Amino acid sequence: LLAPRDAQSDFRELRVGIADGLLRRMVLVDRLGQTTRLDFDRIERNPSLDPEGFRFSPPPGVDVIGRAPADGA
Image 1 (spheres, rainbow, N blue to C red):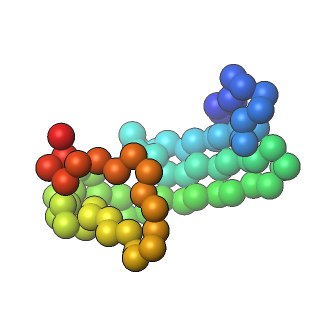
Image 2: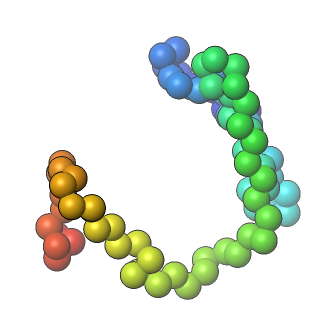
Image 3: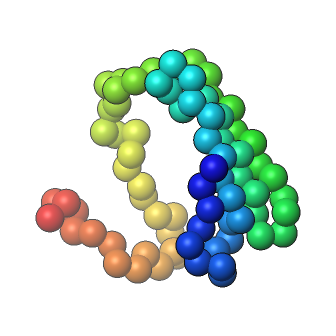
């Protein structure tokens, strides 16, 4: 069970479920008492990921604040 240090946090608590050394479940309770449950299955540790899957191209007319240089520096 994790609880925020800041009383103004959007969440009241976060519960994590771990089995066989892997994260299996997260339960988040927000400040209004709404509960969100996330179950993780088909877990693959350290998969090889294509960097192209992480490119973001903002749609025309959108302002991007603090955009990083194209070379990633």
